[in-house]
Length: 81
Image 1 (cartoon, rainbow, N blue to C red):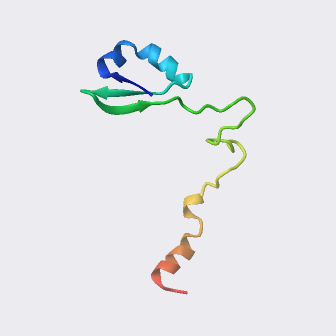
Image 2: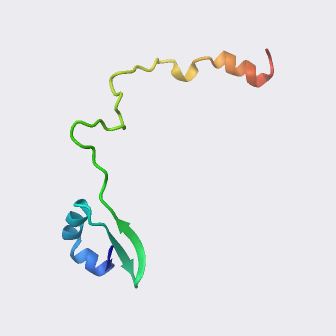
Image 3: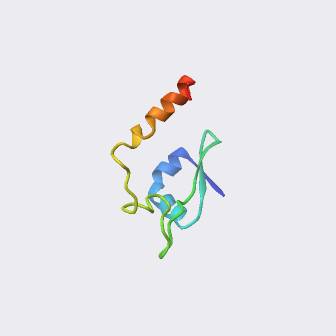
């Protein structure tokens, strides 16, 4: 994996980001000490479903969701049966 100092990384950032997006990860160093690794994001391929928000529009949450079973929960915390 190639290493670039901060100055070189700033100077060539666009080119380096393009290369990273194609799978060529690299390290940015400061005063010779590795600081960060730049890697490509995982993308969702064609025909695949992103896990985030995959049920959007499929479920509904009741308006009283945050108050559901509050009497039962209060009884359990108070020690009543």
